[in-house]
Image (cartoon, rainbow, N blue to C red; front, side, top):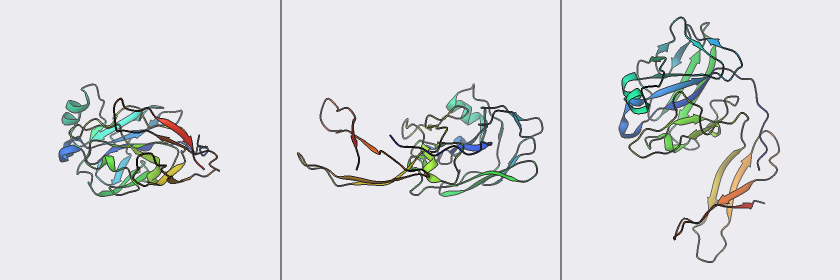
Length: 229
């Protein structure tokens, strides 16, 4: 069990980014906003000022707990993700496959949220052309923190994943601890394996637990847990 940080203030956030769809299908690129607050927010005149060009038209309101999806090609995304998907608009330009800053400003020009994603570690690499999108984990945690993003559930190398217009499966209402630098040597039959990792957050992590399984042989083994020192 990992103790998590207390939540910060909620706001309209950049919640999901499909920047490099499989097979370089840039017509499937999308960005999703999420309103985690308890009241509707008028998006009239809000705009993306970096990454691509888009201005929300007058009368667009994002209800409490709701999502707004903008994309490069509405017909292509609906054909892939389902005709029921509600799309707030289409943007000009395209998202960089190698990483860039996406910046959302309100009608007064004040920056409401920003994400500088990358296709290098420590950012989730599954979103770089392997079928996954980038999913924000905690809407209250910083958008520029790579540890606050996860790859969406993998479908296949040729199928664009993600959950546009829906709750991210990796969602957490509080910030999760950062886990990085996970290392181990190649296991040898009958020998112990040492696994090391760096685990930290804004509070004191009390009890990291390692989940592991052996993936060779039939039937496939189940997950096992062991406390880390």
